[in-house]
Length: 412
Ligand SMILES: *Cc1c(COP(=O)(O)O)cnc(C)c1O
Image (cartoon, rainbow, N blue to C red; front, side):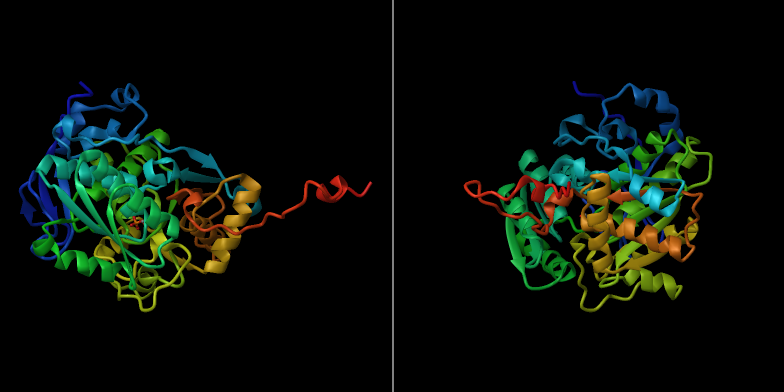
C-alpha cells in the first residue's frame, strides 16, 4: 500500500459568486462561466496533519496529499513528482546588491516543466471520475504533461497547439502518445476548438482553469515553497504569468496554510511577469481594472506566457492586489540577454519564461518597485533545454587544428 488517501474535500465553489457545487463529480466551469475552486474542511485537515508528519514522507508533492482532492490512492498517476530545488542566483544577487535571490527550478519535474504538477492532479482526478478521453489547447508544456500522464493512466489524449510552438514540444507530445495537431492560431483559438468539440468528440476539456484540479496541482508550489522556507515565506515572488494557474494556486495555498495556522507571518508580494508582446494582465493592472482586455497580435519568445486572454484574470489581479504586489512587462531582447548572462555566470539554463522573471527583477529594482532588502524568489518553470538555443560553437579540423594558445586565448 502506497498510503492511505485521507482527503478533506468538502465541495467545489465558484471563484466569483461563491456558489457551491458537490465534490467528486466531473466539472468544468461554474454556472457563471468562472473557474471552480476545490474547498476543504480545513479544521479537520489541520488536526489530521502536522509539519512534523510531512517530514517523514517522500520528497515529492504527494506528501501534501491531505491538501489535494484525490480520494483513492490507486488513482494517483505517478511519473516521479520530485520536490524542486531552491538555487542561489549569485550573479543577480551580487550585481543587484539584493539581499537574496533564489530560483525555484521547476524544470526538474516530469516532462521538464511545472505543468506536470497541474496535469498530474487533473489526470489522477480524471481516472477517479471515470474520464477516458482528454483534450487540451497548449503552448507546448501543458500538452506534453497531459500526454505523459494520460499515457501512464491509460487515458486517450488530444493536443492542439499553435503551429509556431517550439518544435521540440510538438515532437515530445506526439512521442508521448497524444494525437497531436498544430494549427495557425493562438492558444485561445485552439481552446475554442477544444471546447466546441466536447459533445462531438466526447472528450473532457482540460484547458487551464476550465476544470478545478490543475490549480490544486499548481497549489503544491506554494505548499512546497512554504515548507522549504520552514513556514516563513520570502518577501517577493516573481511569477511568469500566462493563464495564471500557478500564481492563483500559490495564493490559495498560502490562504489555506494561514487558515490552519501554519503560516503566521506576512505573506509574500505576488508579482506577475509578462512579455511586452503579450501583457494583458500588466495593462489591466496599470489601468486598475478587475478584468483584462484580450491582447491583440500576441508574440514573445517566452511561449509559455503567450496567453492573450486568461479566464482567471480577475483572480490573478486579486492576488496581486491583496498581496501588495504588482505586474510588470519585459522585452524579448532583455529576456534573451538575461538568460545568457545567468547561464554563463551561474550555470543555470533558465527557460525564457524563467529568464523573464530575472529580467523583471532587474527592471523592478531600477523602478524602485522592489527593495534591495527583500528576499526574492524567481520561478523557473521549465528546463531551458526545451527551447531553441543559439549555436555559439565553432567547428575545427582535427587534421589541421588551430593552435592551443588561440583556443584558450593565451598571450604569454
Ligand atoms: C505554462 C507556463 C507558464 C505560465 O504558467 P501559468 O500558471 O499558466 O500562468 C510559464 N512558463 C512556462 C514554461 C509554462 O509552460
